[in-house]
Image 1: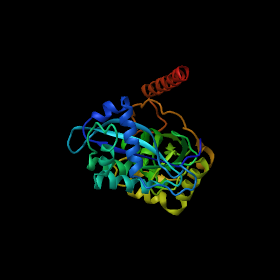
Image 2: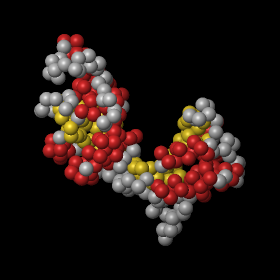
Image 3: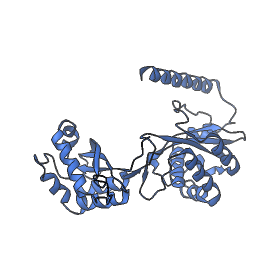
Image 4: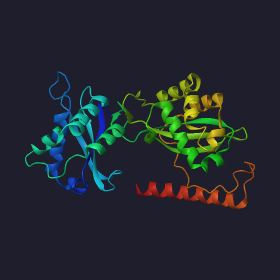
Amino acid sequence: GVAKEIVDSALVFDNGEVASGLSGNDDAVQCLRAAIAEVLTKGSDSVVGEGIPWVSSVKATTYADPDEGDQDSKVAFSISMTGIDAQTVLDDLTKAAVETTNMMAQLNSCDPSWPYGDPDAEQTRHVLETQTFQRAGVASVGAVISSALVFDGFGARNFNADSVAVLRFKDVVADILSASPLQIDNIVAEEYINNPSAMVRFDVAVHAWPIGSAILETKEAVAQELKDALVDGQVDAALLLHAPDCDCVLAVGVLNVDASSAKIDEITMEGSHGITSPPVACTDCDDDEDDLGAGARIAIALAAVFCFLGGALASFLY
């Protein structure tokens, strides 16, 4: 990727007018870009223009207001500037759009002025806190790193059939890496050599990170963070927080530290470990892990064929 100093963030506006009309209104887009740049703290770089925030990648979508039950508009955007940091962006936008009316004043000062509604202060506060991310320095948008952890105590079929276990595992990995759960995806277990045991593979999106997190943008950095967590108690602490009361197979799992360390070294890589197959119903997960019925074998075979055909079709089309 190209070296960047970028923060991604978003604002929420009342009703759905912005979502439906912004993309076709160049004046409104330019007005919003100028208003956001105006309320942000400027940089101190000596090179002309380097200390001025540049707002780009403006995209409006519908946003369901959970409190009012109606439809608002969320506008996501990227801000680039030398020395930019996500915490300052969060503070500046919170002050301008949530705590004061400065953002709306800037929008109204455009010529022509902003044609849509005011920011929704309460929903904007929530979105700012959860969707303000520091972009990695060199990782391209959409970049992922793949790795894995190994557990004894449950098999791969049991884990893959347990949606709660998959979600809790996502929380565990996010805690270990100081990432957002939104960054963790494509979780799937494979049988490991012990019985029962499983190697749980996952992808980490590394192009943007939450405020205060160490930005891990290479496979070496992700691997080292995972290996450090195996021995400094971070994995155990994350499992203790998310697993014991989950009523899922992760609650009976025991981290295999040596096997996890070996697998992290062996398979951590740039890019996804592969798209997960369509889910296959686990009808006999309480039975012996190696005792697959004929129906299950057929279902798994069909899922593999569909996954292969889907990948081949996608390659042909794109």
